[in-house]
Image (cartoon, rainbow, N blue to C red; front, side, top):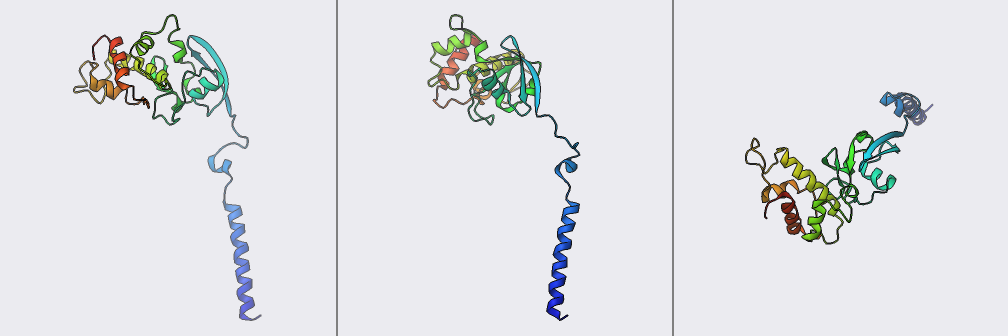
Length: 211
């Protein structure tokens, strides 16, 4: 065997050995994660109290609260905007506290009380903030309005409970709804129409103070 044959045989053996080594040393995804052979269930049963009514759903465990409300319960007043938690259009109240529903899973909220814009009032008896938004023309296209109203309700509750914000001069003092507090606390709710001054007037009226 000449030197060229010896080099060719050695190269072939090396490739075969490398392939065999890779096949025996790379673990399967289930083994690497320490999972059992069978995949885990992809759905779960979750019960929510939505606008005062118990609702039980079988949902994919990856389903957001936003999609459960819109796609499964057909409560389309809650809007899907950026779907990244940056615009606030999907804000709802969970146990009375404002929550960006696109960033929380439905299964994480089992047993909670969820209030959407549909649960705040009726055309004949609107929530005070709904009435104030209409009075002060706090909307143009209206897409962000449900999230704005739910967020404002949560914000006023935070102030009543003494929850400080980044705009607070002293976090030990009772917060006051100032212009700086309003801008800070509502900064997560974007209005692309730019109706911010009217939105502020509506919130100030319900809060019992003048702009």
